[in-house]
Amino acid sequence: MSLTFHERLRAAQERRQSLLCVGLDPDPARFPEVVGNTPDTITAFNRAIIEATQDLACCYKPNLGFYLPHGRAGIEALAQLRDDVPSDIPLLLDAKIGDISTTTAAYAQAYFEAWHMDSVTVHPYMGHDSLKPLLDYRGHAVFVLAKTSNPGSGLLQDRRVADEGGSEPVSHVVTRHAREWNTHGNVGLVVGATYPHEIAAIRAIAPELPFLIPGIGPQAGDLEAAVAAGLDSDGYGILVNASRAISYASAGPDYQDAARAVAADLRTRINAVRGMA
Image (cartoon, rainbow, N blue to C red):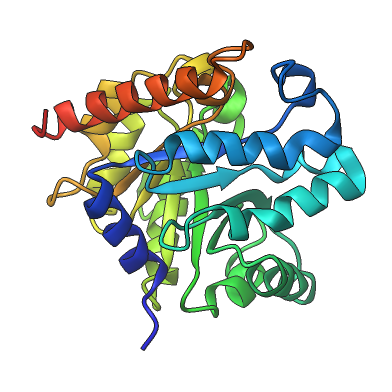
């Protein structure tokens, strides 16, 4: 029987003693001169970052938005990732999908079958039926946006919803539904590092779900506080994502060494919170 996403992820985490997820968000304007600054160099740049970090990362997260502006070159670079990332490391596509079920079924076929992604991010605004085609791929995971890292996330996510004489934030309502949707054991949550108190509150509601935690680096999330709030009872349960902080640690010919140094430091800091330093 094939392993589930979470089983493959846990194996990668244990093998590398890492909860670090490296984001692959190419911006040719920021590529080092030694790589070149055109869309045709995206694949080469991604390969260099992967080569520098593959023993430190347990997951890679390409963000669809950074590939689409470059047309065919961008799509080809995205499709190439499954061949360039070591086969034992999962790929999580950050696409924030959410549409009517027939459209979502097409997304699922594209991302899971054609592009061989192992997981995707989704938004829950349209409800369970809009996500079911993705959830039905039992070997793949779906990370549901609960509390995102951006400053404006509170517009809807922090609004309180009345229920049975009380109320709770929308992010908590989403969390409770995500647990209900986890019938195949392939649901996770996105909770931003910029709100560690919300990570703790959501962990209390969903002790068993894995969290994707973006927002460290340029978004200035508190790494140690986010890790401490998100860890499950086994010292796992989280993917701490860093993208620009790693990929663009240097614009010089030492960019691979610089990316590796940042990734290694982040892994060390995460493991220190876990008591593994």
